[in-house]
Length: 142
Image (cartoon, rainbow, N blue to C red; front, side, top):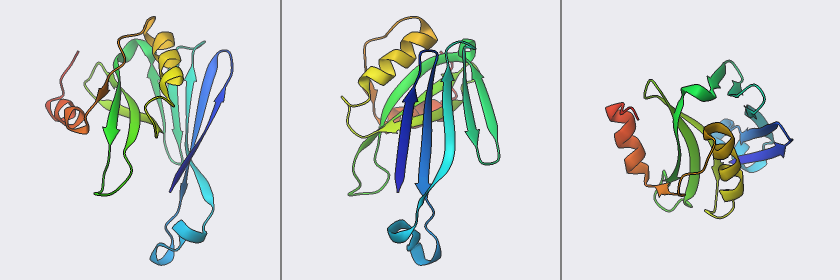
């Protein structure tokens, strides 16, 4: 179970990702509360992404980002399809950032983030999960 809260300010976008702990026999998914899992901040003034988890904080300077991807994800047969956004950096590593559940829902947010990071917008493209896996496996640099 997953929930995210998006806060936007002039110079920042903050996405708080909440998860339910499955707990004993998975009952937490039914009866448990959502707990903050990580916070992702797009800081347009400092030109970096800060991903703060429970035990680790990662900073990604905008100049290290080579591309921003939207890809489809459906991890189990019968699950609802969702759309995930992440960035590739110069080393070829991929950093997953946030999720949206319908292609039109996240478009304005994605366009703003892309424009702030790269200075422009590429034609919007949703990639298949297999494309992402292939690029990660090959550590392709762009």
